[in-house]
Image (cartoon, rainbow, N blue to C red; front, side, top):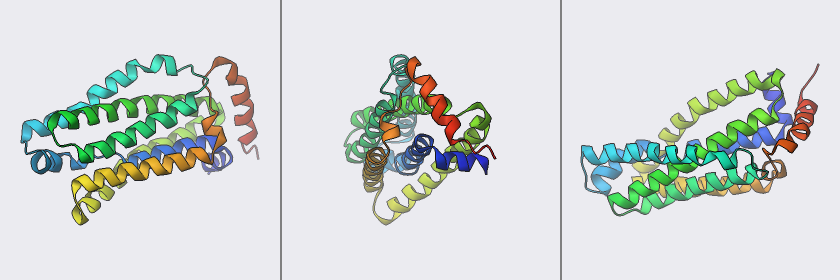
Length: 213
């Protein structure tokens, strides 16, 4: 319960976890890739394999690009931008009409998701005191486990009721709207920094949010 109390008192950590949950539930279209490959793009098993591989290729480039963002005074804004790109890539995937555009969308999604994950982990560690880091991390791991499962259920249900393409586009749109709303109402997220000089301020805010009783 201490971890939950800390998260409730820390707008930055709460918003980081909410943005992550929104993206995992609405903008992870992997369960729909077989349907997209076979019926949407007219491909076969080889096409499905390429679609599944594309996000990993993009994630590699996202990780390689994380060096500059890793010490940015605008890390919170970078994170919001990455999730927005992630959502837009999911929307574009729903409208893709060929294998090449679909692969590009998935690679872009993977790159944005990778960089967002790196920034999120760094910001959570920066904003959370050592006494609470294990508890907060356990809740984050729980979210990372449950989120994709809920997302797969959501995407499959939407695809059954409408189509795989609509599920991807609608999910990306919901992710984009929710991320924009969270960022708009959470100044701590927009102003979050990973610059070295911001560490002392982050430590003070983190300690103030801890329930010492």
